[in-house]
Image 1 (cartoon, rainbow, N blue to C red):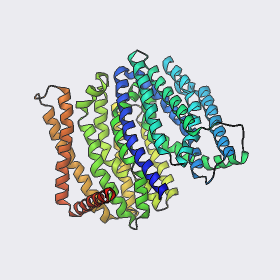
Image 2 (cartoon, rainbow, N blue to C red):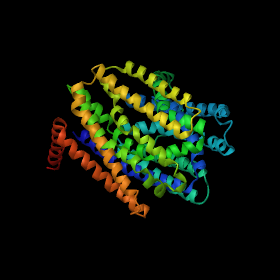
Image 3 (cartoon, rainbow, N blue to C red):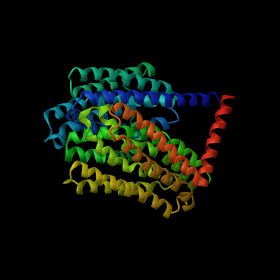
Image 4 (cartoon, rainbow, N blue to C red):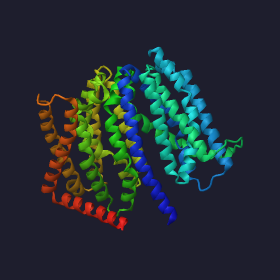
Length: 487
């Protein structure tokens, strides 16, 4: 019981500190965006795209291997550390040797930035094993506080450097500062000193476990970064920077809601006898609450982008507006993989992911002659079509019942359409000459978003009885548990 209480306490700490850390990261991101030019921002964004890929190669499976072991010893830890560090160095050297394939037509600044950043994976590789050891002991509190502190320190240093005219190198300093602070803190907490012991048996076990996961992680990485890759190669790093700014708030909302709730959804649906209804309810709740936030980010983009990020980021407005057309579709299809996993259809899921990734890749190839904005429109269309097909696939193959779809999913979608309509009405009001101050308009966008949600909420609750009844029951369950917890 004590252990369970400790786990719950650590989990609540993790969630609370994560929100604070995301807020701090956002503030730092905004300040850097205001100080740096689009090209400077894009240079580091392009280099980091490949650095993140290197990190995926290095860490995929190793952390899970450590976490799933019943027992670990000094030789095991030394072997895992040696493996990760060695692989990180070899991969960094390999990318250095072939970097001309990706950077031959890029600026000298971008090549220099990438070369300097190539040392980063070797430093951060020391953290992989230590982080896994803390997670094994449910020491999430220390991990969360470490991440918050390193983000804050690195942010202060990089913002000062950006203000002092370091340009793109301010972002490089940000990355190194965070990793170095992380490494120092982990060393103090874990008190692990790498030894020279090595077990070939553990080494083979580690990579037999990791390689299958590596293939899946690599595919997942490029499926989520396909747009970044094509934009940077075809349209240049400036467009990549604009794309990053355009998706900043959207990704923040997705990380704090959709991604954070993934283990909760999986756990609840796995234990539920009626998996179709369980998933339909969760997806409807998510779409009902989260999709309006993502829609509002697009509808009111013209009122917050330049006041927050700076005048140089005005091109991001139209990209945000276009991408917001995927809000409902992404919420509906976010847990598509979990539906199949709970049905034991892992192989089918892998095959479908290969198909979907191929579709996005081909769409990128056939769009190479289009302008940046036109390419985003094509990608938005493809995202919506793939998401619609995912839902059609679930219903056709009876992984989700049509009755559940009609009772829960349809009301949430209609609620989103009502939200869109009311938001557009409020936006036309903001476009009038009545308001001069951009900060007044920014404040009103938040107020109007709340009004739009309340209108859509009450209309949906009024006309859809099954959905309304379930929302009320869920609310009473949560409030009753909260009261019992306080008692």
